[in-house]
Length: 90
Image (cartoon, rainbow, N blue to C red; front, top):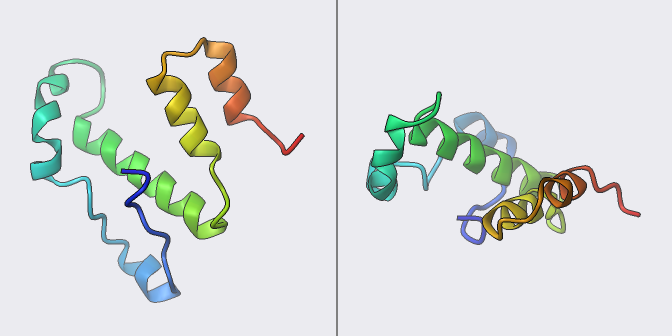
């Protein structure tokens, strides 16, 4: 989803805020996960998509959140994940 998420191009798009990837068809394969945890797959997907859009809207070169997602996906230790989430350009 990261590669396809697009930043808002103008204030009007931002006000409409149409999410393209967190819809029932795209989330169908994850429905079983709704039996676990506190939040639905749809809610988590929407939050992820909004953060991706926000980061890309702020700066085309921004990639901190992508790095956090990659660290989680690659099953890195908690210290590596937190490090990516708090990186300040050092």
